Image (tube, rainbow, N blue to C red):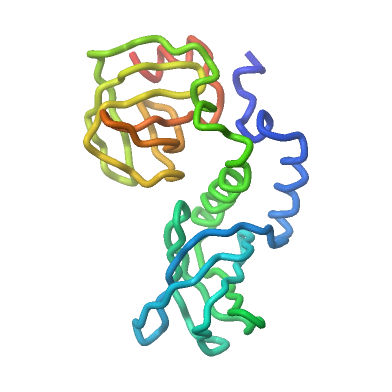
Length: 208
């Protein structure tokens, strides 16, 4: 049973544990994502994420807010984060996040997934044998909204769900009773990857 509780991070790369420790110390990790930020006067500008930790980020932009100014930044696959400009850099600025502990934990998981994307081929969520479940229904929780969806297929590592909803790639959801991350969109709905491998017993409990 212990093997089924192994986290995805343990499956990805052996150095992930060291990366996680670095993140807890707020060490910035290189990560390039397109984004936008809004200044205190509500004007918005394009930017490019350069590096990030759970405590803050540095972005590239020709528009640098004042040090101490509050900004809200939105990055592809990461969503929105609020913070305060800490300093200017030669090609942009760095800002410190002002987020709740819950948001910080969510950021840590998202950053780990984004950093490991290159090690996850499109088929990564399909490495385990999938069982066809077409016609069965389950639920999908996105934030605080619960959606009735079709369970198209299921494996120890993920599921395919039939739904018109398209949560952003990289967003966290609950499929049935199991926490997951949205890995792909397809014609009939979405593919999700569970945060931990599921035993047959856990799958039966989560998707009765």
